[in-house]
Picture: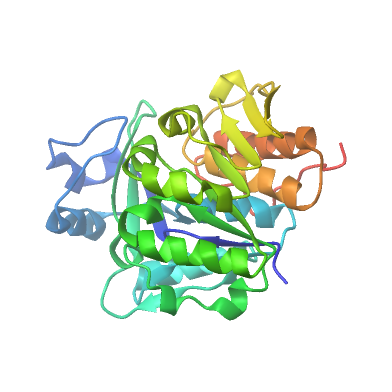
Length: 310
């Protein structure tokens, strides 16, 4: 029996220093401090020349599950990888966190990769290709694993290319009396899929996102529980028709902001599914986020230690 089964993009994060990778020097369109696009051949060139990089299984849901599992929760990840070294790295990373694999294998496409380029001043540039994880066939999902879950956790990024699959997954979950948690992923995703949120919000039990993502929802009705992260302004939680504010916990050290929101989601869902009160669930999420802010990697450490009772 799993506490949670997460379904999302299986992305291998490769974090490297700009000064050590010549391939980036040939690309004037690199957007320092943000995301930049590449052609497939340019991306392959980057991977070919990549050296001295840190590797972790990434993607929004996978990063959340790492926090969930590091806290002691029983988690399973469903996604799709290729038959290459990056697919093996992704699978190995799940094992390191004791996350059960529900991975599908694509024999034709390579594993999705995100290259995080760290500049000398700490700013980052990111480029990525989803590859194998882009299309998720509903009939490829191992439902024997999913039906053992108390909660399914889905990400908004799946809506762009797998809208029908997401709808089928949610319908299947509700028929099986499995709770559904959903992370909004990105304001543009929310705007593109307002029809989906209008029709399926009543089938979502927990909605998680940042203030910009919730702003994109506009005046749409919310599910029974909604969690809005607001950075240094704290966290807002909607329950029983009212919003409750929780103050932010100051970060003593900020090395990296990537993945902090994902870690918060994993920590909060751990508290929620283990029946902690809202204040404690939010605080667990905040502590997970703080652990990511203090390290280079975009996920919590495998040996994360939190005093949950405190």
